[in-house]
Image: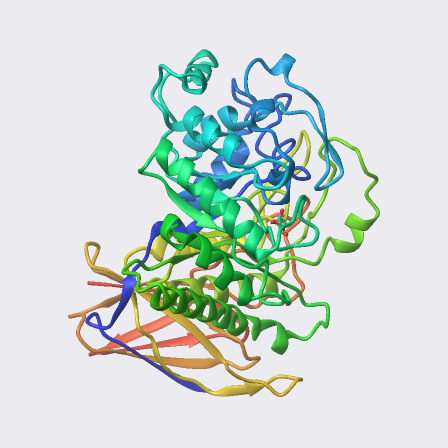
Length: 498
Ligand code: AHR
């Protein structure tokens, strides 16, 4: 089987915004307690953060982390998580039916994010709360001092403002499951008025309005249009969320889902542009894909979890090799849409549908999906190139025709390095011929692969390195052509250097 890819350094989609390698920590399950924070853990630092987890997060190089939710934020009082820890209230947390101890809050998370080398993408509560608490939170986080909330931050030990640049105006407000869900008109109005106040406190911030919770929502499209009609001038991004499953246990259909992911992006961009045209606006609304992943493995276990526990093991999906292939395809889709997708958050980061898993008091390890994310984050920064692909097609059970090759390419001018990411979605070996028109002489530097694993193979605490990348890929360059062997069902990172 043979496929062809044509690349030119003149044919650029856009520079990749590093924030597309973002992730997400919600007060949910063991993401915070037992995940990033566990003061009794042997690796805990002076603030109670697990250093073994921090090391893995740093390995991923995550430039931005969304916090504190998710569904959680729609019932959250941010003040509960500030000040002396022994005086913070324990609350019933209604989104996930747990008890929230508030041992970690925005101040602590800010410290953690600094240690992780990440900035915070902060969400405000537009469920049970509204514009007033949101403006106070911006004042607390970003105002230098001399006012009630900025001085409260200083009193709590944070002299310097946090300088949080990007904020989410609530979470999934269209979802009936959301605390105080809203209609598009209700949300559009509140988002607009909240945005005005937040930007008055700090005009340098950027805001993300809630788009639909997924392409499957009955109000999809109409929601985006109405919301943007209300708040177009005051926001900068609209959010997209999606999670995929393989309940059907059908690898062809499963790996085809990145095409749905692609359609979701192009559809939302088109809706934003239709509102732009209607409003005669010069401003473009970009996309924040601030929740995306595979999520289904843990659903039945979650149904059995008793309510009102502290940090129960919720949403602990154990990812397998086929999940890593789809996550790789979704990452490549984000790269190919670098012109519109400026922020994206793999949901989530630790324990909760996450690339990093921990045992309470024990090990931390990388799941299968950790690796494609790490590769994209390390080698996917630069100029995303237009990919002209000629690939064999496979037909899915439902009759969809899907290219066997999914690819993205990033040119890093400074490093003189071209990285081609590729997934072979077929059970046969594929020869990939890449025509390199104008890069000068490039040599094979590294061809990383993940292949040869069973589609259901996983990493676990007892076998944490079962599914790992190898450097055994075959790529040869002759003249302006690179020829790579893509093994059946494989993830490939082909690095060519000057
Ligand atoms: O990421 C898990 C949950 O999925 C989030 O809390 C919510 O926003 C989405 O439905």
